[in-house]
Image 1 (cartoon, rainbow, N blue to C red):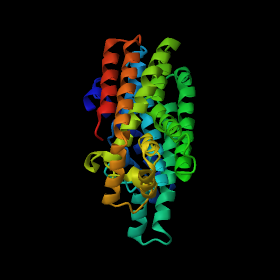
Image 2: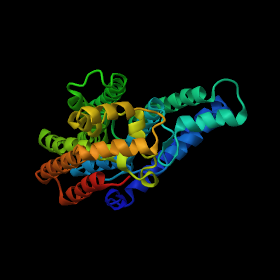
Image 3: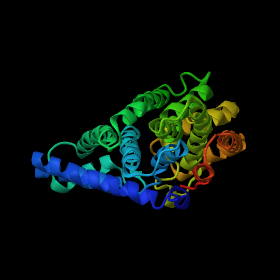
Image 4: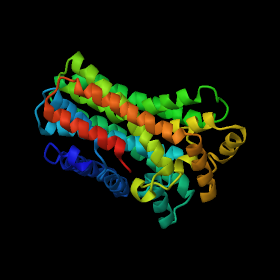
Length: 359
């Protein structure tokens, strides 16, 4: 994926520099509060180091596709999306009680370890979760600050503000739907697949691809035709990206995904993959799956049983078909978009990399 993102010379590195410079400035502000705040910046600096930079890339290349010129302002505005993603991931890990993220301890586990190492009073786990909520809140606030102070003309920023605001609100709504679906798992079986698709769309798909595209294009002053084409390219692609993520959450290699194998099954995630398998499973197999899903102590044998049900019901093959269909629709919309060939080439590469990935 790196070559596609870096097609405009070293875009990923430029985004990283903006992230690093911003965090350095924030470290100075927090140091005035207390030296005890240092772990916040230290953990967030590690968390925000690297990554696919997909959202920044989609924003930047939509800007270019709409006729915007390269410059530090659009790179900084695109980098703001990295802080928003960090906030979403940190909070998501707390809600899911995830142990790892990107092959390292999740932020709340890092703070819990800090508490344990110093022998502080109270529950280390509770401290870690509380500190992570604050760290996520900081990232959410910082995303707005970096966007606002990106250096782009205020009138330019105003064009993108509606998209930027809607993106953040819709992700929170989608996250709540995901939380709700786990809470009522098994209680509302009718319509489970449709609800799973809705979670995919609002928790992940729109803010991963469509909203960054629309943000970049609106900042550059794109008209309705281009905005419509980019939306038609971005929404199915974002859904395909998340459907691939759901497959990796069950069948992925932990060395590549950075998360333990089967975490989604232990957490009882009602993804499209799971909802489809449950819908297709017969009585005994359905009961078996219901009993195993969401079991924190789910062992390898239980994981293998659930994976077998997913494969045997044809759910895995069906979701692979959904990914292929959405990618095809996405690329067809991109092919018809009135943009330059350089931007089209990069966006095509990003689409294929987002859906073919193994991590």
